[in-house]
Image (cartoon, rainbow, N blue to C red):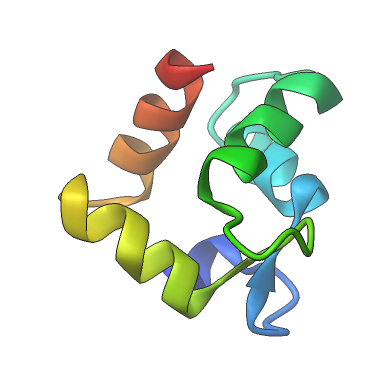
Amino acid sequence: MFHSLDRNQDGHIDVSEIQQSFRALGISISLEQAEKILHSMDRDGTMTIDWQEWRDHFLLHSLENVEDVLYFWKHST
């Protein structure tokens, strides 16, 4: 799932990739909503989510696919 959200495959998910992933599912979210999602997982303050942050977050919130992740994010902001 991480790699499908990391659109440019640089090893990090940023705010624009969060918005793009929602948009690909027909869901429009604001920059503010995308930033809230990012902040909920960004432990080191880089304004990106790396694999370790992703893994640590979803060890507590096990989800099956990208749609589940986006649904979880959308309803947690």
